Every structure is written in structure tokens, then in C-alpha cells.
Length: 147
Length: 147
Image (cartoon, rainbow over all chains, first blue to last red; front, side):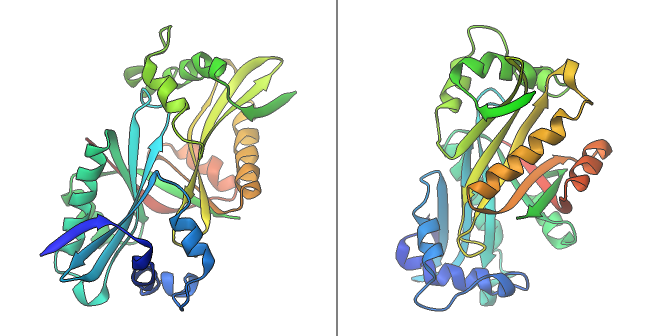
């Protein structure tokens, strides 16, 4: 049975390994041990960042992060932003991602958010269908600029 | 001369008035005084949310919010996310927005962010040109789901 919980520091090597096991992540992450201090600092940085793991039989098989965002608009409502969604390579295409996003939506609702938001690469048609099937509307363009 | 500073609680009525003076905002904000407590709670909620005002001759003429996001990927780097960008109606199309975004990019750099990101409605071609002229790439689709 797949369960979900807040990540612990001891989960970080598994999580970073999943972030690195990705065509984009391979070039920008460093999963070597001991983990770079930046990962540990980020994990401890902000209580409004919820790092989550999906666990099956004691094995970490998925991860995502929810940023709980306080903002004035609309009417001071909190929003939940889902990021860094990854499923372990050998468990992909088995429905784990759907369970993870459904869990994250419930977590946002429990935290009093009025909206859940995320961005995904424009070219990933499979991801677009996936999020639309979960009730999301792709109404926005996401812009990024590296510094 | 237009200057920029962190917003104070006394700026909130001006800021919410700008949020409400917008085709979308008119239906979802409440700028009546005294301000609804939700706005004040949101303003005080999180030190990683930076609410900014642009001021000219003592008058608040613009606002935006920067969410500083700690995350594991990439390599524990902070990201800055720009939201709730508004310019007072009588000062639009005068270059204020550009100064505001340039200020925000500098603020993200000063805070050690590796990336600045934002989303904007898919239909707003003028906004797309604006952000592209400021060095942003519209590489992602932004999905939202209301709760």
C-alpha cells in the first residue's frame, strides 16, 4: 500500500536521486553522497514548504513539494503550488503520480488554500492531459529567467 | 522619481484598491474599508513573501509580490516568483511596470535566487511581449484548480 508523509532529512538521498533521474535533472542535480549542503539547507529553510514522499513497503517511490503561498489576492487566501513531482523510474506509469497529486490537492484543501497551481513544460502533452484529467485548467503561460 | 520599498501595513488599502481595479480583480477582491482581516493576516503571514510598492511623490503607484521559494531542485537554489503585479490606472503604459519588474529581478538576485519565474494569462499577448523583452522565456504552461 502506498502511503504519504512529510519527508524527513533521512529521505533526502532518495529524493535527490529521483530529481537527478530525469532528462533535465541529470544535468543540474548532484545526487552524490554525502549530499551537497545546499540540499540540506533548502530542506530546513521554510516551514511553508512541504516536502512529501510516497512510500511503498518502506521504499520511497515518489516525491513532490508543496509551497504554501500567502498573498493578498484573492482576499488574502492561501494558495498551494505543486513542484518537483517525481516518481521512481521503476514505478512510473503505474498510477503513483495520480495518487500523489490527489494527496497534494487534499493537503492544500486541509491547509485552507483556495487554489492549487503548478507549471509544466509546454512540450509535455502527456503531462497536460494528466493534469487536465485531475481538474486543472491550463490557463496561463509560465515564464522563467535564469539569473 | 519612482522609488521602490517593502510595503508597510499602511500601504494595504492602496494596494488592495489596485488589485481590485482590474477586470478579473473586480469580481474577487474587496477594497472596502476597514480592510477585511484576511488581507492583514496574509500581509503578516510569511517573511519569505516580499510585498513591494512603487512610490512617486508620496503616492503608491504600483505593487507586486515576490515569493522567495526554497526547494531542493536545482541543488537547493532559491527561486523568486513574481505575482500580483499591478500599476495604478492613471499610470499605466508609462514604463512603471518595466521598472518594477527590473527592480524585482535585482531583488531576487540580491537574495541569492538562481531563477525568477512568473505566470501570466495565456490570452494576454501584450504581457507576453513585455516579459520576453525583459529576458523571460515562456517555456511552461501554468495550470490552476480552484478548491
